[in-house]
Image (tube, rainbow, N blue to C red; front, side, top):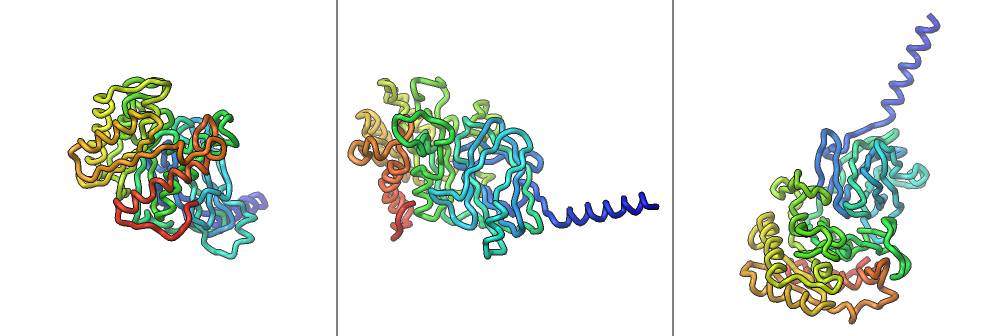
Length: 372
């Protein structure tokens, strides 16, 4: 009898503990994902840089169970919009790892009953693929998170768009994944300025018709643009824009530096052919009148000339170009991070160069607010 009573009490206690916590799968519709993702059962996987999600809960804690093929870093914001300074940075590595997203001490001090958390991938696809399995809150429940913003932007780029080496202390410092930070890239700054959600299809070292130092021959950014996963070179999971709720007001293409790297350059005919391929994919996704802005620096004479000429002669609607010279607006010490890539100061200056073009092309106008 005593043993039966003990077992009954244990069952009651276990049931009470289960009632005190709520666990939802990563596919729960109350979670808002921004970026290219793939559903696997009740899990959600992705690897593109800057992919992020919003989740809203009440309770004494918030944990996430996730797996990663390598090791990725994430920014976390609690009860605030994204910014250059997250509340904390977490790492996802290994299988079925349970990660505390919100410090219980923070929740005890907060006067809010309901909290929204934003989690963004800092690192790019080369650092691994993340799979989110589930979320759990203790003594609380989940509710609908903020839906996709009315304004949406798409960026296609390379290491500049990824935020490669952006948190390094000097231009002499070598790159490490810890110094890559998508939330400080020009793409993130521009999107925050306009209050827009954004997707970054970007990979370091990639070009239009030639990658850095001719790496990955015959596989360039126009090819990766079609992929659900950055690192899926087989294109086993092609991206279908028609199935997505994300509908950008325009696409910004910032590519070409790698094409002209290491004192080599692609032939104009090849560069034009692959750039036009990319135009075709973008227009097929969003319509013939969808605006495209092509950004090219004048670091190499041919790069700017190539982009200007191919845009002027593409015969497509609503395609534009922007050319600028970094020597006139980037200081070699104050504005550069790892491997001579732009740091946050340099990325801000890039954002300020691009913002007026987006404001004009979209009709959104300029905002009376600083870029952060």
